Image 1 (cartoon, rainbow, N blue to C red):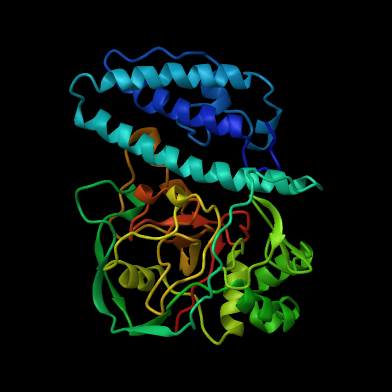
Image 2 (image 1 turned 60 degrees about the vertical axis):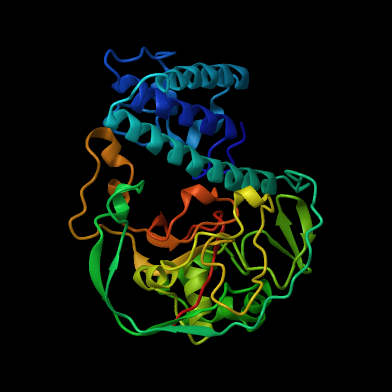
Length: 377
């Protein structure tokens, strides 16, 4: 039930909300519509859908002592049974699309479960572990170099057919100047050099808002770095691995590091140009490492998995964007302000959920997500 900050949610709430999503957007859309399991659950477990009605305040989700965990699991079981029953007969295209959206929504919350649990456990001075440490082979990250692309008039966005969120469409043309992009993610050792060089105290490297944010919050290193080359992980406190990709950085920190390194962050169009020809392979949730791992070769690596990669692109609508109809139109479009785009998924992401056109987005100060850095020039 722990809620460590307003942006995070208790595990119990995640379980109930993803269940309510199927009840509200799949079962209630049937003819005749399914009856709600409990009349109060729409108020308690609606996240941000204003068209549905009033809802419990986000920053007070940790105070929901009832329903109990057992009652939430019973609720989940009941809705699962009703949704499974749909598969015994042909479904309309609209219902099938909503079921698929619900599955991807659930994968999003599986990732949030891990980021929220990690943040909650970190608040405990004992720094307890989510699970026992695993004996992972130590690798050495290959030298970073830049891979060049010609640019030109190119198409980005999800093609017609197959699943994609509405904010990934329509596919459209953009002009991209020639650019180069880092062959791998930035490592802990490389970021530590920025810290030791006074990176957090050098205003010339920072956006004004970012420098104020770091100063006001007394930020001097990535979230979960504890000093003395120690870091908090889901396996508790461990030695910082210099060769692993650095993670849990705000956009402000990523941007400042890029300036310090004589580079910049890629645009989301540049990132998609580099990633589109590649298969979606990498260190994902299914690998169960639950931590970023070093690159292996000197080729273009880690575009998928390991950490979400900040881009310098503000989150906005593509030309011709059309949100889904009804309350589902609030899923993505209403957040197209004051957020930055991230690409590629992370070691907390489910592999089937990620694709080269996927647009994740968070405010610039976000640090509790599994976010990292890829440089560009």
